[in-house]
Amino acid sequence: MSTNAEDRAAMDRLGIDPAEFVAVDGDDVAAPAGREPEDVEPMPVLAVVGRPNVGKSTLVNRLLGRREAVVEDIPGVTRDRIAYDGLWNGRRFTLVDTGGWEPDASGLQAAVAAQAERAMQTADAVMLVVDASVGATATDEAVARVLRRSDRPVLLAATKVDDDRLTADTAALWRLGLGEPHPVSGLHGRGSGDLLDAVLEVLPQSPRDRFTDGTGGPRRVALVGKPNVGKSSLLNKVSGEVRSVVHDVAGTTVDPVDSLVELDGEVWRFVDTAGLRKRVRQASGTEYYASLRTRAAIEAAEVAVVLVDASEPLAEQDQRVINMVEEAGRALVLAFNKWDLVDEDRRLAMKRELERDLVRVPWAERVNISALTGRAVQKVAPALRTALESWDKRIPTGQLNGWLSEVIAATPPPVRGGKQPKVLFATQAATRPPTFVLFASGFLEAGYRRFLERRLREQFGFTGSPVRISVRVREKRGRKR
Image (cartoon, rainbow, N blue to C red):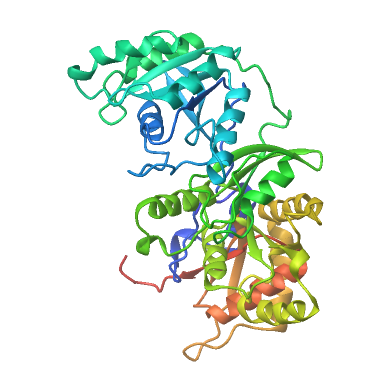
C-alpha cells in the first residue's frame, strides 16, 4: 500500500512501520479505478451498413483488430448502432456497427433499419457491406440507391471473399454505382489492410458534427438490469431520440450502446447494455457474449444505474445485477422504473421487499421513474452527481483518525482470544471507491468492520458509493515471512 507524505509522517510519530503489517481478510487495497483519459479531438465516424447476415459485425471485429461486436451464425443479432474506437496507421476513428437494413421491413426489424438509417445520417462516411458469395440482391440495390443520393462518401466492401475464386466475381458489384468494390474476408482478414487504407482516404480529419462539453470528458454511466426492464427506453427518453431499439420482446439489446447525452446541463456518456438473464457460466451463444460485454461495461463505467421493474416483485436477477455493480466497486443508482403502473398495494409490498432483499445496499441512491411517460426522469442526473461525489470523496487523515478514536472509545472491538485488538491508525488509501485501511494489533471481526462502515457513512455520507474497509494486523515478532 502506498502512503502519502501526511500518512507517512503520522505513522512515524506513532512508531508504525507498514511493512510489519499484513492484510488478514484477503481484501488487499487495489489501485483506484480512475477515469481513463478522453480524446481531446473528436474522431470522424464511419457507419457500416448492409442487409442482415452479410457479415458486418465479423468485418467490424476484423477492422478493429479485436472481438468487440457480438457475432453468431444467425441473422439479426446486431440491432442497435454500436460505436467502437478504431486505429489504423496512427489515425483514430469511430466505427459504427449497425443492424441489418431492409427498406421495407416491419415490426422489430423496422426499428433496426431505422437505427441504420440514423447511423448513416450522422456519420462522416458510409461503408456498404455486400456478400460477394451471393452477389447483389434486390435489397442491396435498394440500399445502394439510397446511398447514391446521400452527401456522404460511400465505400463498397465485398465480404466473404475467402480465396481467389470469388475475387473475380466482385467485379459484378460495380453495377451498384458506388465505385470500386473492395474484396475482403472478415473471417480470415484477407484484404482488410487495403480496405482500411481506403477508409482513411474517405474519412475527414475531424467529424462534421462536434459534440464536446469542454470539461475534459463526460462521466461514464452504465444502464444495467434484467431483460425488458426499460433500459433502452430510459436511454431514448434522456437522449431525446430513438438511440436504442425498443421492443416488447425481452433481450432486444445485445451489444452495449454508447451515447453522449446532455442531461440537466451536463454531458454524460450513457451505455445501454444487454439484459442479464442468466449467470454468465450458464449462458450460451449470443447471450454469453452479451453477458461478458455487460460485465465489461460495468467495469468501464464510473456509476451504474440499475433499473428495477417496480410493478413486479424484486427478482433474483435484480439482486445479482446489484451485487455485480457492488463487487465492481462502482457508484450505484437504483432506478425503479414503470412507476406509473404501481398502485398503493404494490408500494407497500415493495417497501417490505426492499427492507428484506436490498439490505446489502441501503446506501444506494434511489429514484422512482417512468421511462415511458418521462415521470421524474429529471431526478436521474442529481442522483448520479450525488453518487459520483461520494465515489470521489476523500477524508483527511487527521479528521478520519479523530473520528475513529471517538467511535472506538464508545464501542471497542470485540475481545478475540482473550485479547482486545487495538486500532493504531487509519488512512484512506484510495477513492473510486473509497477504500480505508485500518492498522490494528489484532484481527477485527467482520461484524465490527460493518459497524465501522455504518458509523463512517453516518458521519461522512458516501451516499451512492460502496465503501471498502481493509484491516492490516501487525505480525508477531519472530514470525517467518
